[in-house]
Image 1 (cartoon, rainbow, N blue to C red):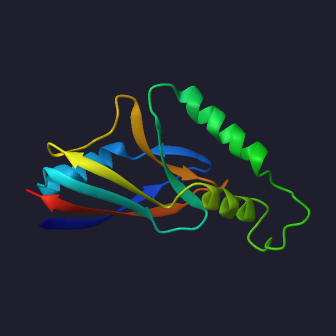
Image 2: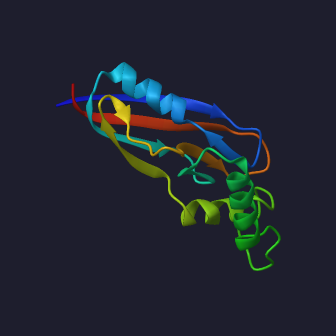
Image 3: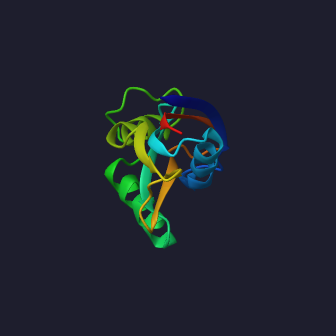
Length: 140
């Protein structure tokens, strides 16, 4: 059994989905593992990870709109408000999605579907520096 680990940093420009599929592919390729499991983990509480369609940007627009309606800013019952009006909604959105994703690796590649991509989903309005830990374990 072989394994490798790497931390990659994503500079966001505010709310939105940032595709990181290329970083995952490059990491798997560099690790030299042909069959195994890639785990992506984001080290923050106000953003998340998604596997989502990467062929039509309207999907990203609709996802952002859905989450903005589901967890809007300005809910008067929120207690945690010291970091701004978008912070607690960002924590809730992250709780509804995921901070870790497992992706099978076959033939030396992450086993994404035809129109699938791995995304960092930034829930905060202002730019952030986000760290994503990539870990792979498997056979060379």
